Length: 621
Ligand SMILES: O=C1O[C@H]([C@@H](O)CO)C(O)=C1O
Image (cartoon, rainbow, N blue to C red; front, side, top):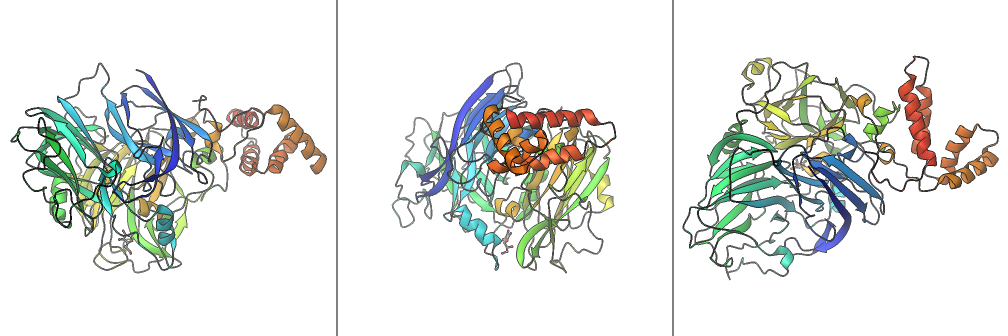
């Protein structure tokens, strides 16, 4: 295994993903960001510089479980503080499992602004994949809005609520064509490709070969369906786990999911073929995205002889369920424990706070605290988030088939604390939204784990459904969908010390509070890099610190040197978080004999006041 090192700078770009110029967030001047390709067992180190002028940034490595490195999960306010402009943070983590992954921003709605890219992990040299192929095609699917994400967030927060609406374009590998069709040649709806940034994507293949097509969806909102003209697809991988192979003509992909399919180029070799991606689950107002499967030696410009495949009707949920229910694990996949230690039922509702529209889980709409959970839980910092235990069920009288009788909800940053190594079942229960006869699709994504999908059902989940759980070959995934008015049951083992987000992967829904936070075994997390603990950055050396301490003594009188030191931080104007951390550490010292850990923490804190570090080099990992 290798260490793979990357130097990235995140920045704003003027870019034309769908032939219309807008501002996008890119990496090293590129949109989408560079593809990371590694082998299972490798260590990835991304030295990430924030080149956004006035806002923080983080990057989440979607599908990577971050065993032993929970601070590298890249979730603002959960695993770390957002990286300040001009600062650098090093994400160093191991990719332990081959599969199709991706990375994306996880702060505000930066993902929707274009901060994303592919992360592909090949099997290790001594690993054999359970299928063979001659070549690879990589499809990173996304949707694109012309309105910038600041306007989108403002609308979502406003009263009256302003919904972001449907995307203007769908993108394949960051390229689409707004309001036109590549398939319409010369006619009224033909595309006028103004820049290479929106040029059609062409995949060159040779006849009579097998290709692995990797497909990942990073959409802000859209649920997608993909089909390749004349070609059947054999599903072999989902979210970095092998599945029991089956063949389809078209497939759904929800935001946060990834798949691999095998195709054989056994069609008429004198033609090229369309790859078509359309919207499902919401009344589509967006043209399908098209790419060309170019059979060599045909010209890539030769238009396919048959029309692009047509996306199934948006609300044909029977078709979607038929596909989703077929996804089962491949033989040899690790099986779930047969019993759960704890079962939680999460009711998903759309509701209101003071007239603002929110999404809630058991009537709590998630708001993230300023101090990241990983640091505040690790240091026993009181008051950093809502300490109350969040609810694990919802009232019997709640009718999931109707709009909420009382739409008022509450806000919170409560944490579900899980016993380390316990088996946790979560039943995601969908319900009717605020408007009558509306229930929407929500793809839920779990950080830090894969989970087994034990079953799905329509209507309200009941105890009787437990008996029907699939314990034989449930698929292992990190993202799973709940269908309108339905429920989805999943099981995971809380075996990864850290603090992990679990949320709807629809970007505006997460912004509106649709998520929860799990913590497990945080007391076992060692060596959290200081810059991930609190939101303070020190960039002065020990002698400078001493000078400031002296000044503090003058101004605050006779303080102990410790106190003076911490007041000194206040003088520099950047120390408030750390003041709280230190106080919390002192308070928790108490007399209960559990002092060693706290002394270590205090030592770490002290080290942070005196040693020089500028935004952190991550070497402490
Ligand atoms: O969160 C959402 O808000 C709108 C609608 O429900 C209210 O305008 C919509 O379609 C969502 O998915």
